[in-house]
Image (cartoon, rainbow, N blue to C red; front, side):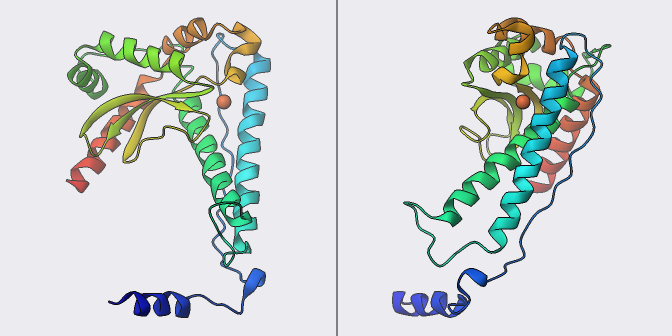
Amino acid sequence: MKVKDLKNMIRSSIPLDSGNSAVISESFVAEPKQYNLPTEMQSSGTKDSHFELYQGYIKSFNQVSARLDTADRQNANSNSSDFRSLKIDEIYNMNAAYLHELYFANISDLHSEITMDSLAYMRLSRDFGTFDDWQRDFFACCTASRCGWAMTYYSFWLQRYVNCPIDLHSLNVPFGAYPVIVMDVWQHAYYRDYLKDVRTYTTAMMKELNWSVIENRFKKAEDIAGVLR
Ligand SMILES: [Fe+2]
């Protein structure tokens, strides 16, 4: 196809007369979930304010999605445009909500236990050398994150499990990743109880990881990997 034909095709697919009033009807609507965190390693004040923050991210995500319905697409550009700003905010708030759900679900197990015959234990040992090596690497990611997250994920490209730090909610997020273990290391997660001591907070959270929830994520990751292969 010639460039001229391609341009004509793109032009003909854009409703040029619709302007700002074009309704794309693409808005996403998310609902906050409820979590029970029996851990005594976080104060009730931390838990309550954290749930409020999470709900705020969901609210922002819904608002951004609704605004995107009628955002001006014709004037979208890479320097400064409402459309671009909203699309950036969409991912920021979506990641924030999703990461918090993964985090709340995989911490605060007072009877935390991992067995050597579990898929999680075997895969982490296989891909990091030993289970202790995974712990050391994950802990390092927690302390290396600049106000953000640490994550163990299955990489569909590398076909193995990998750890990474994420800054904020959307910087250094790997593509083709299925999260299996997620730790919140924003200051809001620990400052009230641990001041700036992210190491003690992280150690406390890692002692209460919910390996039952995590085991199911490992199984799902490998089911999906099997389908993609
Ligand atoms: Fe958080």
